[in-house]
Amino acid sequence: MTKQTTDTQLPSPAKGLFLGDLRFESMVPFPRVSNSERETLSLVIESIDRFMADKEEDFRAYDVKGEQPTEYLEQLKELGLFSLIIPEEFSGLGLSNSGYSRVLQQTSRYDASTSLTIGAHSSIGLKALLLFGTVEQKARYLPRLATGELIAAFCLTEAGAGSDAASVRTHAVKNADGTWTLNGEKIWITNGGTAGFFTVFAKTETAGGKMTGFIVERGWEGVSTGPKEDKMGIRASCTTTVRFDNVRVPADCVLGEEGKGFKVAMAVLNNGRTGLGGGCVGAMKRIIELSVQQASQRKQFGKSISEFQLIKDKIALMTTLCFASESVVSVVGHLIDSGSEDFSTEAAMSKVFVSEALWTVADEALQIAGGNGFMREYPYERVVRDCRINRIFEGTNEILRLFVGLSGVKEPGENLADVARSVKGIFNDPIKGFGVLSDYASKKVGQYTSLGRPRATGISSCLQSESSALEQGAVRLAQAVEVALKRYRKGIIEQQLVTKRLADVATDLFVGMCVLSRVSAIVAERGENGSADEIRIAKVFSNFSRVRVSNSLRGLAKNADESGLALADSVVASGGYRWDTL
Image (cartoon, rainbow, N blue to C red; front, top):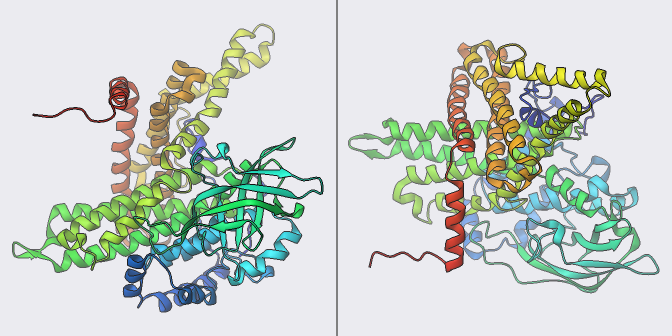
């Protein structure tokens, strides 16, 4: 249950796709939960099921009222759900990222607000303390955080600093005695009204940098919270503003290095994505069960609607998206648990894919339910409201797409720059110059012929067609990246629609790698005859991905981007939609 480490850091599989490489080393064989942790997880999951299974009416009431009762929070504490990732030495369960994600998956089968309350505490609220805290800080706070005596909250977002985290206005000034004076306000803080422990990020104009992370306790003078926000979804969870008025922060409450708060914040968000991913997977599993029951029981035209092809198509897609999401969340959790230092791109990809997969699954489930899906007495409309936030918080999907795309093109851009420099200085240093050109030429030969083409290693032979599609997709992505870099050069940073398309292609390919790895492991264990449904999932996802990849790549060369951007400028200038048929 402790974090594993690797002797050798494996290169990022997601970034490899932008180079036309398929790096399966870190995901073949497909990662599995350790036997020792599996026993602990079984006990935790069994306890969750016993506690939450009969509370559907309670959860509906909490949603309507917009509040979790104090006694319910106390029950969550008694179950140990605030101790999940805290090391055993500090009275926690010490679960790995993968194990923690599996627990959030289980609670999300019942109630998203519950998952958010315990998830915001562990995924982000106390994560900076775990990752960057000193021995003294951990000893002081982690035991109380494990019991729930202190609930944790993560304070980054401000009215003028959402996705642009670097523009925070909350500021801290260092005093002569080493303490800090903190002023500012944070908005939309999950657990804001119940937390006793805040991870706060503030601007600090010091030699060390412009942002610093701090530990702040609710009981300190000058700390206050606003009223609960009235939200569209996840209504029962507590979301408030948190204000700091001349709060005196002790010198030993800095998290990480002074001035390195942005690094701390991003590390927390990257590490926390497995919790969100697990929550999305759990919600998908539950609503697929509900949809199957609904489709089997509802009769139209004399037979069950589960017999109609249009309904079967929905159920197949929902199942495939859930399996793919579970696969990518598992791989990202494994990358973190195995000690990888370069998983931010994979984590961002998983958040984008899984949050959008849940939105699709929830929407299709409501559609299958028909009129019932629109009524509050059924769970579908609440799931739709609850899941919409996932595409917004912990980094909007738009920002994460840009992050994925720009992170991915960095190394190919450096390679092209090396080639350009080698051509210019080839006669000054012919050995080095021709060496770089030779590597580049070999790569190009591999892209356009079967020689050196990327191979999906470790994948079952029964998935040859799907492996081939993945290989071809990686080559086409690398070619598209090179074309984009040659065309835009450093200006690629401003080409958001280009970056988005490249990111979407890479994300679908990376998720495809996760799916093929998982299905291959199942085939190896059960044989082809015993893995018929999993092989079908691989085929459905491969086709789903191939269509999306082709559309995105085609859009790089042929699109209406200029017209669309000009139209948007015109609509903004006129203040809105100005057409009418009158």
